[in-house]
Structures are given as structure tokens and as C-alpha cells.
Length: 110
Ligand SMILES: [Zn+2]
Image (cartoon, rainbow, N blue to C red):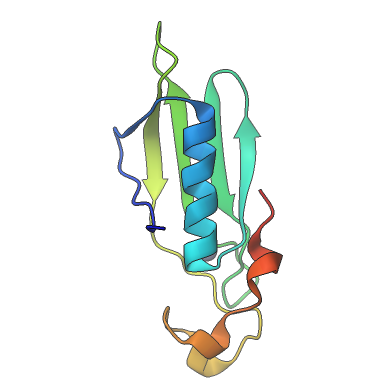
């Protein structure tokens, strides 16, 4: 499956489609992304990963319901993960070192 790309203004036909895309991103990027808001009007997912000094990763995507439609539109998107690996090795600053990634299951917390 593809790694979904979010964009501001992007439309999702139902909350389920949004959540599926977020989940797919979490799997593909192996990041601990969690749905933090999920009500009738807004959806928001954040990365629960931490950066070097225990600061939270800024990755976040939120969507709001478009009036009179069942569609949700992406309103904010902070696309850069700054969370390091759970192992906290210096060489794990980069995004693509496979050795720095934890087991897949631990990231599926949606
Ligand atoms: Zn992150």
C-alpha cells in the first residue's frame, strides 16, 4: 500500500477514510501516531514520538467537517517528523536508518 500524503485542503469523504490514511502513514513511517480528537466536527492526529530533549514531535494533521456535507477537509498539517528512534542512538537522527526503527506493532495505537 502507498504512504498517504496529506495536504491542506485535501478532502476525505468520511472520518473512516481519514483515519485509514493516518493509520497507513503510521505504519509506513513506523511512527507512534495517535488519533487525539475524533468527534462529529473535527479529527486530529498527532505523533506521540519524542525528540531529543523529551519534546514532542510536531507532526500533526487535523481535519474539520465541511458544512452541509459529510466530507472532512484537512485544515492543518505539520508534515515533518522530528521524533527520533525509540533506541535513541546518535546515528538515528536521520529518517531512513532501518536499524533505528522499532517493531511495527508498537506504532499501531490508533
Ligand atoms: Zn513523529
